[in-house]
Image (tube, rainbow, N blue to C red; front, side, top):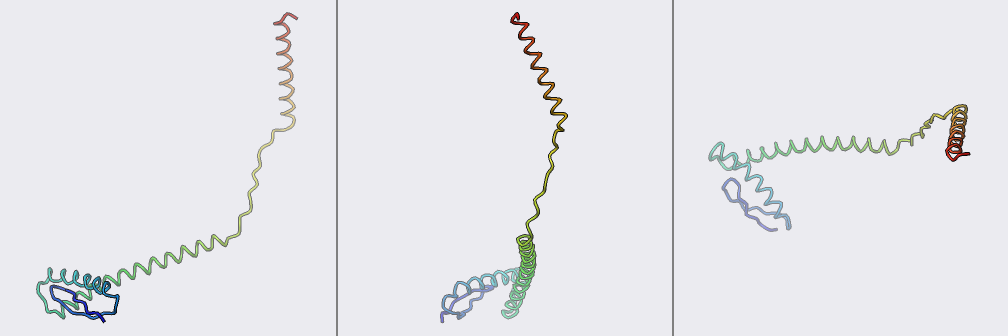
Length: 132
């Protein structure tokens, strides 16, 4: 079992840990040291046990806040997953029929008649222009 030297609040401690967990111990010690440094800057020199207790409580408070946020985000994610699942399982909507207005037959007949008269007039004008 490896022993690691950590420094918290300007004091050095020898701590044993499991093989391969040295990095985690150093990270945790760094966080505790940062809290102890804040305490030392605010209060000044305090007994070791009190410093460690206060720094630990400050970290626990931060951890509780992060856990609350994590829980809220997990709840929100669960709601979104349920909504997504509901959308995935929803029946396919019926296709909508869109009616396109149709031009009445008598109007198309009238337009065809007008077009035929226009062509006849154009032919007549062409014939007169050519001297028929």
